[in-house]
Image 1 (cartoon, rainbow, N blue to C red):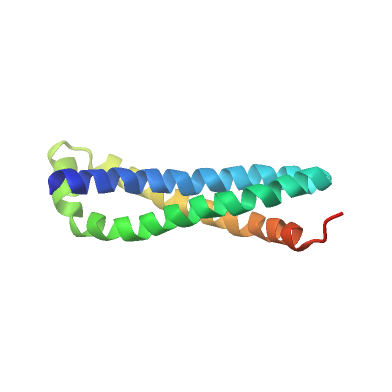
Image 2 (image 1 turned 135 degrees about the vertical axis):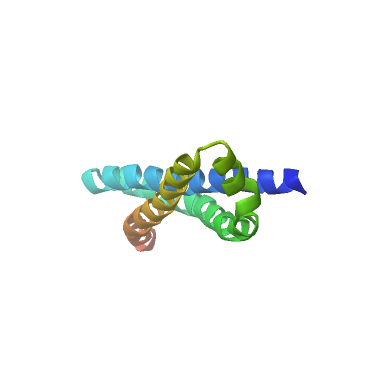
Length: 124
């Protein structure tokens, strides 16, 4: 059971990184689309569908994987951190993870509007 909880916590962190990185990719493509031409907007629209699947999967894992992580937080994260004197590090880590989820989600929503507009636009 311990191995499953540890793996869940690891993949929960990876899901957070996946959400943030897909948001960053969308942000970069969105900036290129705003300043570029039709080709850049189409690249954004093509990437949007694929990256949306990654982001949705990551968000689902963040929510679902967060349940056992919360239940076993004291046993697998807080008590070991307290024993090793790294509670402040644990707090910083979780503040960073929450900030990454929020930042990735905000980037996603903003750039998603541009991508959706291009997907709805008539093609030449």
